[in-house]
Length: 426
Ligand code: ZN
Image (tube, rainbow, N blue to C red; front, side):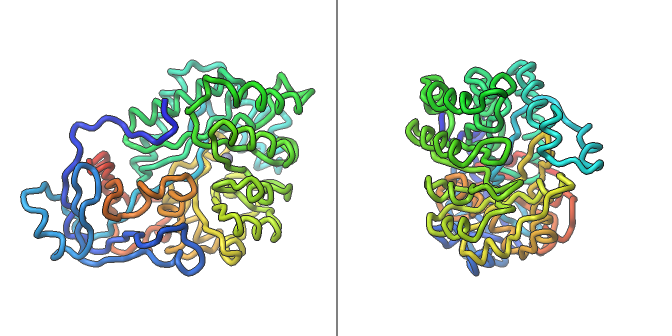
């Protein structure tokens, strides 16, 4: 297995001309995560074309400038509609077994995430189901989800372990994640989330579980090179900021950069911790302090906002995205796909970002593409349509990008091109 993203086998490494693009969103032109006003700049080119060679962007711009270099190349006609980069989903828990549809009734009865977990639902129940399933079963269920994600425009996805909570069971999930990367037309960035919850067998001694992660799991040879990031759920009833720091620093010693589930349910120092350890991202940030957000801006930690979690919780507020943007932070979006919040569509997340977080359509699209790529260390490869990058493109059914958030919960993706090869046709 490799810590770097991989893509699946292709019948041919695409050479392609995407022509007759009415509105091309390149998202190009910046060497760092977009903040402030830069989030509004989609790098739009009208009447455009893209020339792809061996799966990479060779030329992009006004059609009359690109065409002379494209003689004899297979043509894909965009029909005068919108073309944009494939979505980058910066935060998922897509590898698991089972489902938890019964918890909707508990949520409707007013129970919180923590209460549901304490009553044996929540993460512990998915840990049981995932441990009981074979690797092949988890693989089949995960691939099924990824297939639908691709059909809705996601071409790069961060995927966390975290439903195994022992060395062997976490390795099982990381192997599933690696296999998905090898077999599906999607880039996958693997994250180790052994600190997702304290497992049942350590319930009476949570500190003992932290010791186990720091002293046995993270240093183990079997985990070497398997995950790019180490993530911790810093939250009351899960892991304290102090425990999170121990785990993240151990992860760094063993080659994993840091990510933090920060301030999702309470204000518990998650944003401050992310800044202190130099995390690439801190995710959720519903209850972060001004001090924490300021520290994140200083450490250039990206804010990954996950409005789907608030939507499906029935009890959480939505993140104040305007406050996060005003602090000068780069913002990214993700589905947070998990058995708690089963959302596969980045298009739906973009709608939520606009209608519930009050982000502008341009900000939400930047956050779902190039900034999400920055949040998972993939900005050199994906997230914008620029010469040299992977040719991961969406051909949409609409003529104006503002229809993406506006037309809620319908799949506007007509075709998905991954590494220059068409992998979905609607
Ligand atoms: Zn999460």
